[in-house]
Image (cartoon, rainbow, N blue to C red):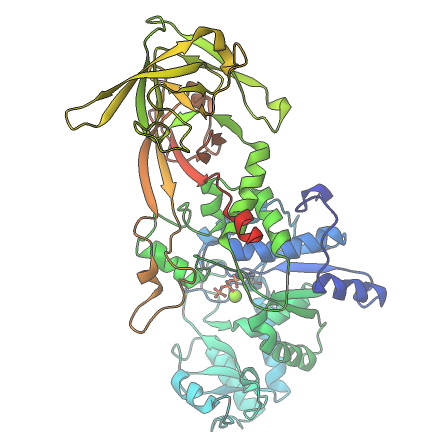
Length: 563
Ligand code: ATP
Ligand code: MG
């Protein structure tokens, strides 16, 4: 994988994880190797929080010229699906990362895991327990009270071996028995109180089919998988800090290679939920149109919304990694895409709330094609021709009949510039029977072609516009935050996060775009001049172009920073 693909192309910002790796390299802890992995469970689509972990793991492997595996932690057949496996690969690739031939599944290790479980039993370090799930919970104790040993804890090695084999052969029903590690029911760390290692689940697995009716638990699988893949630095989120002693216990008891686990704070984003369970609920209960609804924080959702991989990598760089939990302002993510699209998106003109303008002194049936700059930030983007005709649309809010002092846009008697077009002056206001303004009659100065002043006279405003005759009506979807409150996870008694959904998070309007829009394809990104950044949606048909508003032009992040 090419070095340039990493985030900002600048020297990577150091963080506490890189400091640890630097030290390990100095002491030659892993013979100079750096090998990370990204280990999603294929039980949902990836979201922006996962993107943080992906950029971290793959980013480190690139910067240290090491390796990064993609591994599906597929130990729960009931919740997992190939649809998720496929989407995860697509999303990681889209972010710009590559695992070469190192895509693995924890289920590839089921045979080895089973053998390791046998080893634990033979060492007297694991036993088959007949307690129910509920009883196990009760026996576990609390943070204040030690747990109680199961009456089945002291079964003989032979009996445990026989029972475990019978579990594997399908002799017992789901939930009737489990295999537990024999550690310490009085440990202050609840994870060490004889955790479950294997459970019975007579379920079809998306990869191993019906081969197994017992499945290893996540904690057992995860550390053994990392070990099998000789991962050097096993990066995970803070909630796994308390699991580390258990992982060490397993690997020491089994005499296996031990990676260095390092925990970092997960990403929390304001106005956003990042729990897969909650995102699944939003999809299943149809609060959104799917996993890739542009309001979703999923990678597929923000991709459809118009975000670029580069903007996400820059975002990941800016938020950094830390040991303490915090909430990142959504405005920071938005400012990253705004900055990227400002450099890369071509400008076009479109009117979202049209007011008709008739240029009374412009010849009927004539079209003047004016030159418009595609991207003032990028000279190589060139220019295009935009048609100027007698009937135009401007934005309704760019006209006021009785303007206050500071309103410099169009009003009766004032002159403004139509960008790349001409200077126009408003001479007459036409209203309907309700007194609403429905048309402006204006005159233009033919000497101001291109929007240039013919004699040095100045106008105070430049407006965007489209030719009514050439305008292409498009569906434009405007988005607001999916949740109304900064922390949608915080709810009062009797309420759920769903009560925080913003009922006005989506509105669809018809916008009128200049004809060059017809050259766009699904995924094409534009700045609609003065309005925001928009991307062509996959719902586009031969008849109708559909746009998603990616983000408005107003940078609230800069404001927050300057506060
Ligand atoms: P689940 O509750 O289903 O386990 P999860 O969000 O932990 O959900 P995984 O598929 O287990 O999902 O996550 C894969 C990797 O992504 C893990 O290493 C996890 O630590 C990391 N990850 C998940 N959510 C975030 C987040 N918000 N910020 C940073 N990393 C995350
Ligand atoms: Mg997880």
